[in-house]
Structure formats: C-alpha cells, structure tokens
Length: 292
Ligand SMILES: *Cc1c(COP(=O)(O)O)cnc(C)c1O
Image (tube, rainbow, N blue to C red; front, side, top):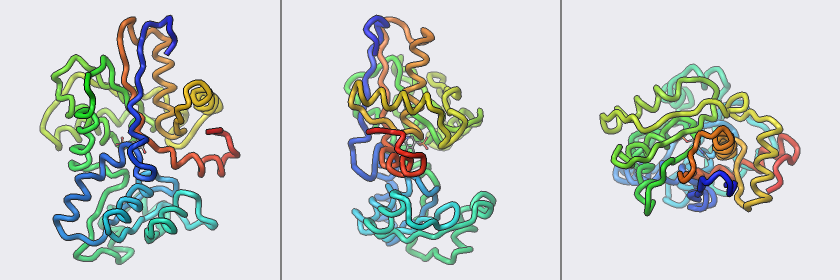
C-alpha cells in the first residue's frame, strides 16, 4: 500500500491453490468431497449461473476425484458455450442441464432435481455457491494456514460461507477483525452469516462486519472505475483480480484506506479467493476490458 499511510497490506493467494478449483471453492469442496466418498456417492449435482466459479470448480473436482458431475445452469443454453461452461463440459465432462430463470429462482434444489429427473441413490447434492457446514469447516483452514494473525482479515462475500469459515476459524481469540466485502446489493448478508455461524458451531462473534458499499450496482455488475482499478493493480503489482469478487474487495480496501479507516501501524491480510477463470468470459461479453 502507499508508504505514507503506514498500513501494510498482504495478500494470501488462495487463487494459486488450483487452476480450476480456485481459492475458496477448493476449501469449500474439500470436506464435501470426503463426505461424498464416505457415502459412496458416484455423482455430484450442483447449481449455478453460466459463468460460475463454483460450477467449474465442481466439474474439475469431480473429474479429479472420479465423480460424475451434473451442473444445473440458470438460463437457456447459449452456443457457443462460454469459456466457463465449455471447460466444465468439454474438459471435465460435466453434464449440463439448463433451467429457465423463473423455475430456477422459485423452486427448491430438490424440486429442480426432481423436475429434471436426475437424482439417483448415489447422488451427492451441493447447493449453489457450495455453502454448507462442511464448506464452512473447509474455510476455517484458511486461517489455520496463517503464521501470524493480522489486525484485519478481508475477504469478498457472495453467500457468506467463506467469511463464516474465517470467523469461526479465528474463533474470537485474537484481536483480529474480519471484514467482508459484499459483491451483492443489499443488507441481508450480515444476517445470513450470523445464521450460518449459528448452524455451524452455535456461536455469536462480535469481531466482524460486512461492508456493503462496493458492489458496483450488484452481482456481476461493474463500472469503469472498477475495471480501471483492476488493470492498474495488475500493472503495479502483477496480481490479477477478478471483476466479480476480489476486484471489488480490493477496491473497497483502498477506499477505506483513503478514508482513514485503517490506522498507522496496522496490517491487513486480504484473502484472494480466486475467480480468475471468469475473466475470459467477462472479456468476451464486455469487450476485452480487463488486460491481465
Ligand atoms: C464464490 C466466490 C466468493 C464468495 O464466496 P462465499 O463463500 O459464497 O461468500 C468469493 N470470491 C470468489 C473468487 C468466489 O469464487
């Protein structure tokens, strides 16, 4: 960060864990895969949008761990397949099933699976975004990896499963504050994370917060300032950021720094949760905005 601020910023590069099961998705899937094996499941079924990091992660994880995979995709099939779905299907053998947006929104996971007639006795179902108790358990290990705890641990948030894992991993013992940056518009995430934590270990924690000011219009929305920031960050540091999650988090961190939110002498650890696979599809859709 800027030398004059006296604040140190570190990045934990979870994006480097795996090329296709990137960042937090690797953590979220770890114990789910173990559990699916224990149940003798042969097939993973999950849900997501057409550019979803989670869909590609499940496809790649299934391929590596000898599961068949089915991805239930929100919206119509569009040809040619975008880079995310192309890899999921043609590199990793995921079977893709498309569901219209209103059914996808209004029906439960179980009802959708029933409608498509795909569940067998040997299926293991992973929810959209991959968040469940086993995913949260996996994300606690993001913290276990750290040699020293920072003043602030920052991460980007979608469903909130990752931050729930980080919060419970720290377990209130250190003076560390956990700060999430929501990629979605709205104020619901704080309550969602509280619920996830209660379901995971029955605990309530005070040392965390969710910042909802840097969603840039909502999930998968963006503005030129975000794109400029991501490109500039790459030019300066050779650290790639994605426009859906990590770019918004990092933009938020820099804005808070400018506002004097972080104090001299404090250090920040930003978790790079991955998501870089999405850049190719993003650039195809929007015209090579990101030059990484
Ligand atoms: C899925 C994802 C997130 C959001 O994780 P949640 O556990 O749903 O909050 C954050 N960053 C990246 C890069 C992701 O792919």
